Image 1 (cartoon, helix red, strand yellow):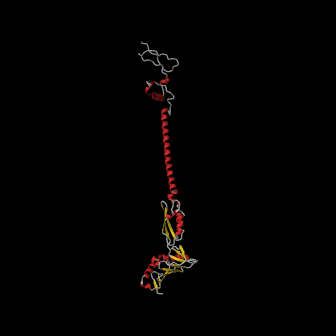
Image 2: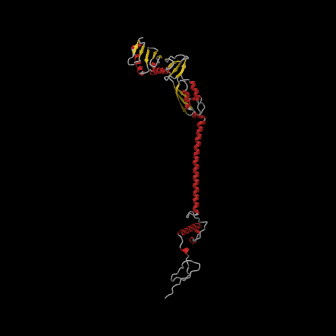
Image 3: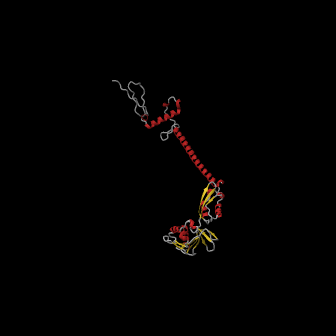
Amino acid sequence: MPDRPTTPARPPGVKGRPVVPKPGARDAPARVVPTSERRRPVSEMAETRTAVRVQENAAGPAAENPRTTTAVDPEVFTRVGGRETDGVTLRMRERLAEKRSAERRLVLRRWGRRGAVVAALLLLVWAVVMSPFLRFDASAAEISGSGPYVDTAAVDAAVAQYDGDSLALVDTAALVASLQAIPGIADATVERLWPSTLRIDIDARVPVAAVPVADGGYAIVDDSATTVTTVTDAPTDLPVVNVPLGDGSDRVLDAVLGVIDELPVDLRARVQDINADSEDSVSFTLRDGPQVEWGGVEDSATKAQVLVVLLGSPEASSAAVIDVSAPTLPITRAQ
């Protein structure tokens, strides 16, 4: 019976199981495999392989046998989160630096555009406010609509107060208020005409009657009883209104002016004077014809139509009085 190979003795100080050589193998001293080399964690092995690749890349193509290198230089291999190397970190830093630089350039361009816009606005404001080419020239103002009772000197003075100012700074609302305060002007509109003048349209009050005033003379009034101007002598082209002074005179005057407003324009010019003791007793005399008893202000439009028809009839040519206070039953009287 052949002898079995004997298990070699374990070297002192080495732990682990001795390796038994296979039959027929060369006689060689048995090597004891340490337990720490037999069972290595997978993560540790992966880190070792990564370190080897890093060192191979650092050595370049001149390395003859990179796989035989197992030692890792701690300065070459630096774990970043367990995976990244110092070279990767450097590239990321460069990219982050480039990104920050691009962001700074973007911010600078953005603020540069904003600054350019602000500068353009300031230049535009200066051109509009301070430029001598945009200053208002009062002598070139276009004024239209002035009536015979409008004080043109007062209009020129109101416009001249803005002479030399920037056209953009002319207070058109204040100018309109100044014009409306002038007797004879009912309303006004002001429009800028660039680069240096204004267009002013005046809505003059239309006088419809002359009213005697207490201190002498006559007040020329429009259909709203607003005084347009005052004159010394009674005008020949306007009817003179005679109403009692005192309480209630405003209502009587309004009634008389309402009657005048209902008359046709050509007939209104023929009225010489109008008398009214109350709102219901209006009468007037024509310059070339009879006296007209009008009555109250009701049905004034119908009364005006009837009066025009009667004045064109043969019966009215010799009539001294025409009574249209009841427009459906007009009356003519010789005396």
